[in-house]
Length: 284
Image 1 (cartoon, helix red, strand yellow):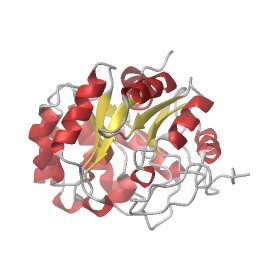
Image 2 (cartoon, helix red, strand yellow; image 1 turned 45 degrees about the vertical axis):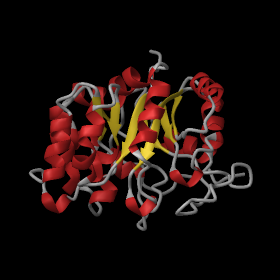
Image 3 (cartoon, one colour; image 1 turned 90 degrees about the vertical axis):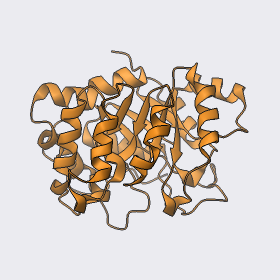
Image 4 (cartoon, helix red, strand yellow; image 1 turned 120 degrees about the vertical axis):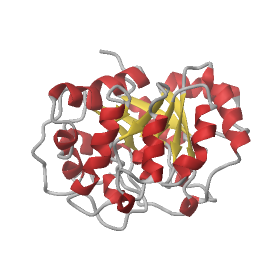
């Protein structure tokens, strides 16, 4: 049996509203059932669906969006298995390529997939040809899906024209992983704010632990600015189990940042509940 104990003894102080959604988390393996991709740049510790469910029970989160990670590549079976285990509470974001059959897209939609993700982080192998992204977007647009982009810093500005040209909702992961040393006036962050003027573009107020050291409060100015720019198009997530992060993270500390990002209850409701329900089609 996988370890279902809390990942740390800290339980946090913020109690999230009912049906709060972890809009960015992963399941890894188990590798003997769902092997990792041969082309992967890292091999994670197994964190199957049971471990993720235990984390959400500990934090008081009622919904989740399971995002396919590069270590599994376009083999989405582990993510889909988790979606099917709790179809009311879970939605998914897949990774696909030109070889993914249309029938598989239909099966994934039935299982709860609502988006596709492309990774443009150089350390993880860099991004695909933009023609691949456009072809994939064209294939899933009719399903009502969106595109999720994992970018880093200057990649936000470099990808801005392509993002605007996609003609469908686009979600930017982890606040664009901008360089915190450049501050909120940095070129990449200003471009991210400019992109949010387009009502098709969303952003996740996640990844504070990738930007700054604990207690992560140095990331607050970025998250607050994004929430002000697009209060109805911001999402929050834990990024559990934090792949490729060297320092252990207590997700309760990340959840405790939420009232600091969004002091007003109505903004917290949007960030944790309403926005995710809108984008991912959760029922009431």
